[in-house]
Image: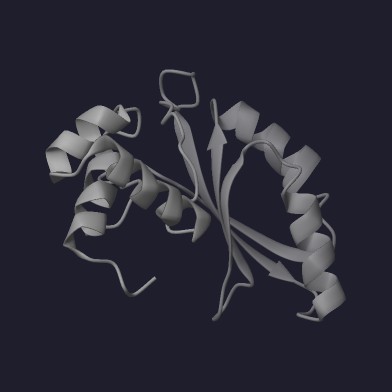
Length: 153
């Protein structure tokens, strides 16, 4: 949505940081009446600029201390092959992110695991069982430097 004005941008900046803020507080921060602010947020939601509201959970606090970046090559890039892989990978609860890629690998995944033994289970029971997979390359994150939930506005 390229026709965002400064008030829309301010609403988005605030909601990125404080998604649970009341409409009244949001309206006060951006200088609108509560009803005008509510209408703008509704338009931003309906147009897809705001795609949802989520609690950001700590993987570490939930005992998922290992992040693994997984590169996957498939047997081909036919539409049916990609669709079957994507349907299957969505069922794996430990896959946090999956991107279709250009370049050497077909997909890159970010996988959460509790430890090395847990990742071995995920690799054996989930990743290796995905359809059309011919190569899996796993890299283990040593330390998280940055993980932004949103882009800067």
